[in-house]
Length: 128
Image (cartoon, rainbow, N blue to C red):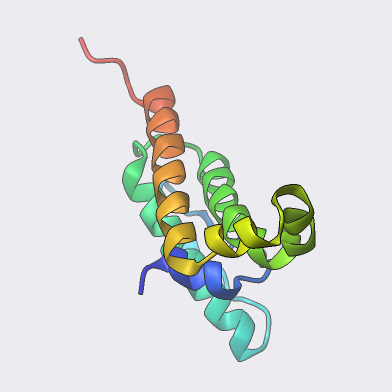
């Protein structure tokens, strides 16, 4: 199962789980708060951060990587947190048609990859 599918199914808000090491590029996992649910969510967020960082140049600030990851998380939370609003905006029938895990996962991946490509271009070192 893809990380985006895991997140789409039920990601809860968590604190950042990465920080910079001594050389400003090493990523270190911070301990999560107590509880197996939170621990699992933190591990999934750490996996997401690793995926995000693999698509960005090594000099991309961690804060920018966090912004990208939280953008993905926000998309994953859309169905769970905004279901009543979505139904009002587009109607119950269309809402049920659009919002299934496979379709949402494909949309989140496609949209997020576009965002990651834009950020990668922004932080890529110019070639001579």
